[in-house]
Image (cartoon, rainbow, N blue to C red):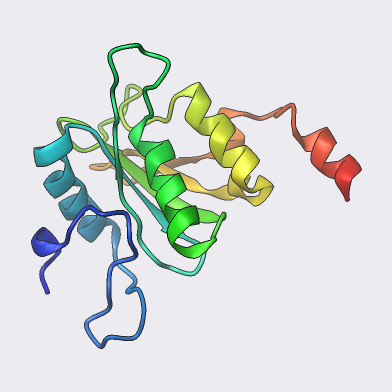
Length: 155
């Protein structure tokens, strides 16, 4: 199965040997993101902690308040399909691969979503420059997250 043939349905992509989801390299993530982009204009692909890959695309509504970024849709797909909440790394793809200058960077709502999904997501890597293979962590984007204290109190 080629990545260009994979559906963007949010489900973990099958391994060639038929044993669950397969692990992919960043170049493969980019190929999958390009395929989603052709259809949906903004795509995001998180890799769950166990190596499974999920997909999401931007849902835009006419009212604005119903918009969902590709990153949140992909995270919700991951959770709904597998119950997983921890993300290792993620790529968001718009009209080209992330190229620095804020491209590929999740918005504030998406940053908050991933922190609330699992506080360990503070270590997830987000690809911000494909050519340089540059990543940032969620912790770098939100260094003093307001929810950390609440998580600590809940323990």
